[in-house]
Image 1: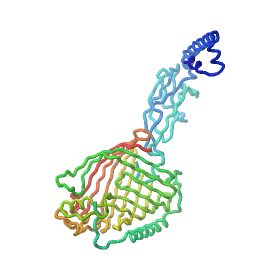
Image 2: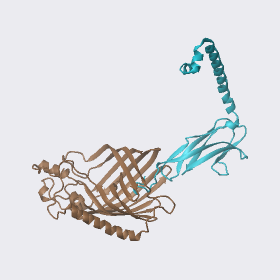
Image 3: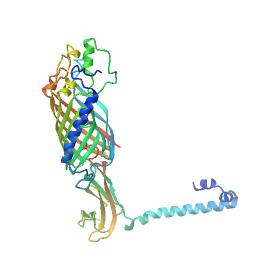
Image 4: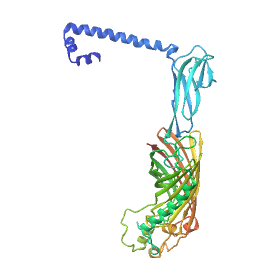
Length: 156
Length: 297
């Protein structure tokens, strides 16, 4: 793919590539680069295993209520991408009390979402304030202009 | 197909419009005095009558009983069908247009002339409901018995009324009083008083509306009366008096996705004697059910 792009490149670079020695050198560089990139790519998941790249994933991440301002209710699955060595706790918003605490190896729990706007869930090591990862769940509405607009009888 | 003939007391549309406008202004002026000055902000800080609108299109399955006789007496009165349903509304400043799918809705265009924390006072320029034939206003007179029956069954029921509407909002409750006079052809006065409430259970929304509609003798006769010169053997002449029609509606809705809503409704109307006694009507109540899915734009 790289080389085909190069053949199509106009100007001096194409001139060099079309010559024998230059072409061999360039292909060698490309091969080395490709191998290098492969090594880098293979190495990336290793970096993700560190807790700095831990991700908290909410599924689903949005809840739909009927009218603007209404509270929305939803069971949300919160999962984190890598196991954590210690016990972890899940917090909702700025609440200082955890929703629940589980073993870091659990990697997923279900929580009941209930909000008229949004809730930020955060994962912390138990008895610490350090946030390992966070995820947001938002409320959306079908009727976004408010239930009283346009027609009072359009209650739903 | 035909408009009901009105051999006596026929008003011109101009006179009816004048009557409707006068009625609306008189009612509105009294209501304005009761309401506070115009204020677009509710006590909770939300905007009640913000600019903008909604448009939704859906498909629903509906079933119910026909209250009007059919041309063919053997034709079943119970009906079940699928239909496209459209509901829309738009407000700009004090001007509004709305067409709701509630059985109490119809199409309304008007001006909000006063608003307080809990009350809106609207002047209705046009409140439209009923059906009208696309055929000529002056078709050849029916000759045979079947033609006369068809003319009676298919005749126009359209009205376009002007008047006043007062609506009160109290949390999830709504109360509304409206009255208008038909200016399309001067077919009398109609009004309604209704109360509605909404409940939320999880993401489900339920709704109940109860109310009563009023038809003046002239309006009720336009809808359900039969003049001597249009009567047939099957449908003899009938003079309808005024009518009060109690109505209730129950519904539930749930969002399916961000722009999709599933809605079901149950409607019941009790027909008073002045309606049920009409030869055109075959029962003394009406029950209908509909269920469908709607896309909200």
